[in-house]
Image (cartoon, rainbow, N blue to C red; front, side):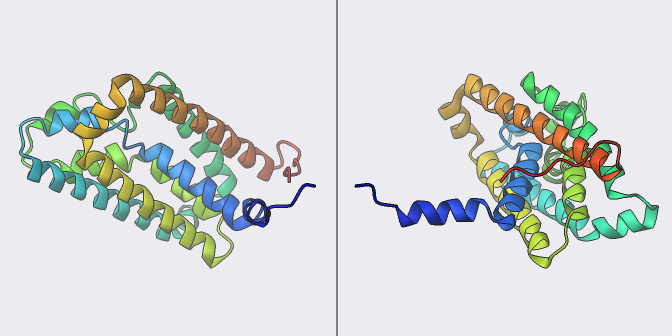
Length: 231
């Protein structure tokens, strides 16, 4: 005789709720674009000649900067759309293209130029404190992450969705702090190969997410027919 497991039923019910789907979309798109694991080599190069206390302080400043920048664009996103007369479908298409370029670079296990320009790491290594620039922005809160947050904000119809976005930003910033403050340990545990594999996996998921944004934009503009969402 087969018994139904109530816990499994509850989990399946949670997975089908709009709140869970939107929260999963928000945390995956924001976290994959911030991608603190890919920033580990640059962070270690920037902090090569500093003591552990300063390294931890820079990681904290970078994570707080990331949280503030993304939160500001999340709260001001709709006002920015309104100010410049930008429609959500147009931004979804543009954001999808940006995410696609970043994802393709991540598939090659390298940082996108939108996240880290050539010479940023070398210049930052000579700065007294690089926690805000370039670590916080643009290495963590770069154009891709900002675009993703604004696309998500454009889809907000209820207060809980905005809460979910801000919660995902806070979660991403917190994880970024712990990853970067323990960058030496993370690299020893995962190794260079493990980090590259993780970045490639995140890049693949990001490419799929970029295409979904792109398709959503074209669908909202009526270029392609609307497809029903699978249950």
